[in-house]
Length: 361
Image 1 (cartoon, rainbow, N blue to C red):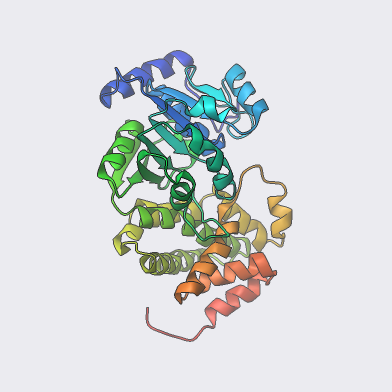
Image 2: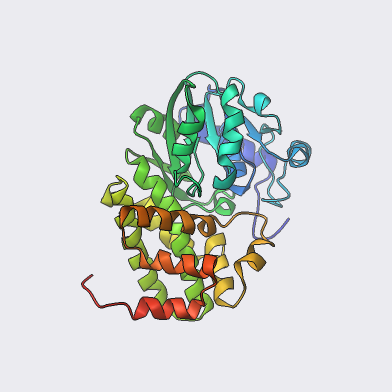
């Protein structure tokens, strides 16, 4: 087992699960929950729910991965060395995963989201709560993940859609290290249902009614994290990184508000909190991608060797499309897009940012 990912012994996990369930008022609950997407985050969320005593099923697109998780109690691809809850079920069959599920969590990368949900909608239980745990923007339509879900669900009857987002690395949450995130929805009932389902003594969930702002914060921060990584890859120093985070937050808020979000949301967990985390830690795929770019690697070289998606690469294109359509100025995100999509030199991009016309903050 890797030293960086310790896992409690089975007996300790079972005792912990009972304490968590009792503290959250769910010791008698066996409502079926389903998580779609067996990447590191989807697996972590499914393990959390199963450890609380909920009947939980994790759907994996890869039948081999689903079978190995069921047999070995480990996601050897995305969370190697972490023993999963013994009660967590896994399957690659959507109908089996979704049948009767009262809460469905979507943790599928943004580029595969619509394809999965076009099939999944036939199996969604009536009045289920849908939770979007995807961070990104659909490239072709510029829709957020929750908007893609609404579009895919069409006339399916469901209780509401909530967004789960905030500063939370899967590898820390699965180790039971403290974290705090937001469950946001226009439906207070849906937001509270998600809050109650996921809250534990180590995973604190706040409700928020600004689902648009929470979701956009989780998407745009990935692009700024690439910029911060490029800065560190070029060894531009801590001052430069602090400036990128601060001005990046201003850009996120500016575009978010143009799309109907509230400005204060970007000062919260799903905005500033997630931004700081992803701009400063090597566990961030987007930050690490930026570091590699700053050191001279191409995006193709970087992404070809990645098991998991750096959502900021795709989101930079969508963010620029949104900004241009709304007439919103986003210089940092624009330069990241030019570096990623057009092959602009990172050093030239930095010079462009630093020599722009002077203005007030």
